[in-house]
Image (cartoon, rainbow, N blue to C red; front, top):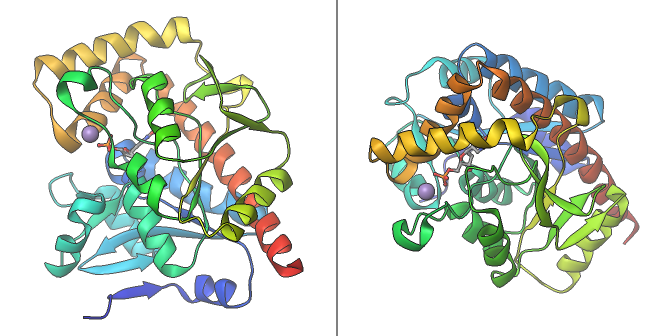
Length: 309
Ligand code: PSU
Ligand code: MN
């Protein structure tokens, strides 16, 4: 079979002419934020990409078709459909969803796969999945990490959430050969907070430098992705001392309910949202916008440097 894939005309046009394109995930819309903030954020993120001179392409599976860029109606459907109607797609269930004519939102892993299929090299999200705390007994390690090891897409995120085990996540990324580059500071950021207490493997102060590294990966023939960690803006961060006890509580609640598999991350995010009285969502929106802007700058630099080569 040929892959049932629809690329929005403006995205196809940008790709054909070597203009910068930024892929965006959709799990954050269906499973990561409540309505209507989810759809408002999705629209703002797309605008932020445009303001920086790149074309946004939100990715999802709609009725069995892989969509590279969503129509307003598709976006509305993902934002309003219940979690039971929209599958959370990763590498393991993407093909079955397409084959069954299903509808699902793409996680970081599935978005990377789709972006690569379409020829998009840069992707912006909020936070990536990682090694969960207690992974030594639960074995809960996000498929996002494996995907970064085998699919050549640069992912811009705000670090890993403190609901995860950050040092183990960094160790595994190193084992998998995934470059981790933090933008503008030496410490790896922790999503809602700028500091995680862990040093980033690499640092860059300029998207041009990150783009150069990306082209060198290409020249080496690597099929690896790359993780760009962009700290949340200072004015929007939640101090670790404030968020950490809430994370502990949310994780304890998830454990008490015996949450497993793909349900863990959405549940914990929802609990953190409730326990912070909505403050976690405000921070989440700010950091996604910040990531979209950096991803657009990176895509622009890559397009420029590719042209020169
Ligand atoms: N971070 C967020 N919101 C999200 C996610 C991460 O702030 O919705 C989603 C992303 O799509 C990520 C996924 O790829 O959670 C990871 O899920 P899991 O831990 O089940 O692999
Ligand atoms: Mn998991």
